[in-house]
Amino acid sequence: KNEVEQSPQNLTAQEGEFITINCSYSVGISALHWLQQHPGGGIVSLFMLSSGKKKHGRLIATINIQEKHSSLHITASHPRDSAVYICAGLNRDDKIIFGKGTRLHILP
Amino acid sequence: DGGITQSPKYLFRKEGQNVTLSCEQNLNHDAMYWYRQDPGQGLRLIYYSQIVNDFQKGDIAEGYSVSREKKESFPLTVTSAQKNPTAFYLCASRGTSTSYEQYFGPGTRLTVT
Image (cartoon, rainbow over all chains, first blue to last red; front, side, top):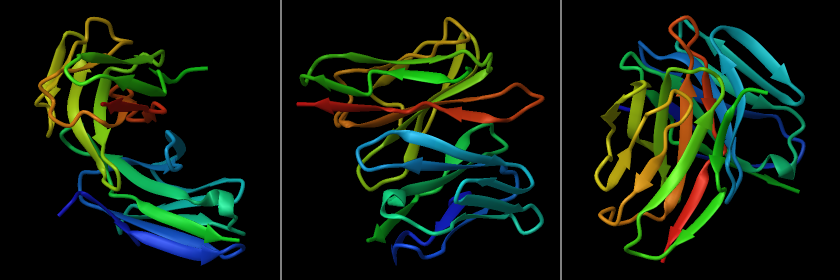
């Protein structure tokens, strides 16, 4: 079992829908990160979370330390939000562990 | 502004040539990492370094080499021994023991023909 698990693997939605991507992580993972990767493009860091909630524009990230779970929400989704969203965290061996990513496709 | 620089964004090489990917950070971070991503796949650890002049192999180190002569630089060489070098390469760093904040470079897409 991967130390960082994401769901869903793929998500297709209509423009304007509220999007939720989930990330569960194992004991020992700290400093959780959400990243965005556009097709053929590089990685962009969206959020780093150790507790609570962060908001940037239409993006909201939350983390529940007790349940070892984080969510990335997109409000009023737009086709330009189509990308792969990746959850990552630091494990006890000091390695950054990545989830396999969620491929999001927003239809106009 | 502090951050990680990877250059170039796209790199093309002929088969049989070694190629070195650059990763520089001005964050004073101790630890630096190299990852590889294949199409439709997750990111896999190639090498990492927790301190200057020291580095460890990750899960897929064969065919790669690194050096860490300076704190701010962690170049990755893709050697001709790497059987499938075409991939996306990501460099990352991790803060000091008082802050585990991670930073990520934009990545380099390497194509070998």
